[in-house]
Structure formats: C-alpha cells, structure tokens
Length: 120
Image 1 (cartoon, one colour):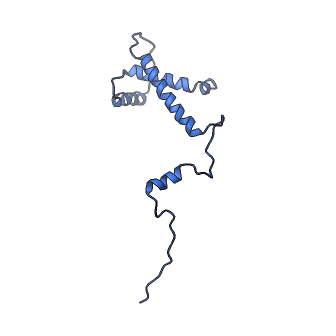
Image 2 (image 1 turned 60 degrees about the vertical axis):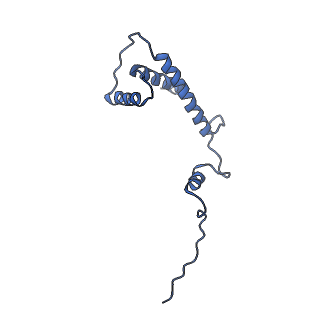
Image 3 (image 1 turned 60 degrees about the horizontal axis):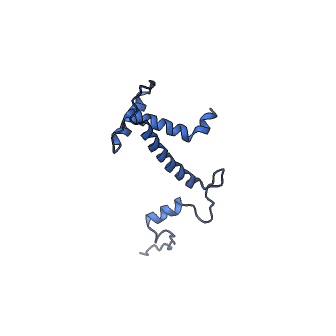
C-alpha cells in the first residue's frame, strides 16, 4: 500500500505562543493607524486617562459625601439598582455607607458627562 503523502503546510504561527498570537491580533500593527478622537489623541489613551480621572473623582466624591449628617431628600430607586449598590458595597474592602456610595457614583457620572447631559 502506498502511503498518502501530503504537502507540508507552512504555518506562520507554529513558533509563537498563544500570548504572542493574541497580542499580535489585539495591538495595532505598524501598518494600521490607531483610532484617534476629535482632539487627535489616541482613543485608548483617552479612555485610560478617563478611567484614572474617574476613579480619582469617585474617591473624592466618596470622601465628600461620607459622614454627612443632614437628612437630604428621598429618591426612589428600583430594587435592581439598590441590590447592585449593595453588592458593590459588600465587595468593597472597606465599610462604605450605601447613601455615600450612591451619591458618589451619581456625582462622578454627572461631572464626567456634563456636556452630554446638558444636551438632553
């Protein structure tokens, strides 16, 4: 019986690890231009800066609204929203009052999206 001989296929990924393959797919290559925003800044850098600024703003708002003893105004939240806030609070590495957490999240969102909210 004759043995079937198949041609050898050149595999460009044969000598690469999975992490190298994924990195090659997900990072923009030299021939691709990175996505830029309206200011000409790369969108990925802008997103990272926004996240860092958002975390800092959130921490500042959390400190600002923690320990306030005034009554404030009552607002109604859907059960799903309150449950999510409680999960965030429980998973935090420190004791955060639910009222302070909600206020900090809301104010951080308002501060970061003020232009969009003014267009509503």
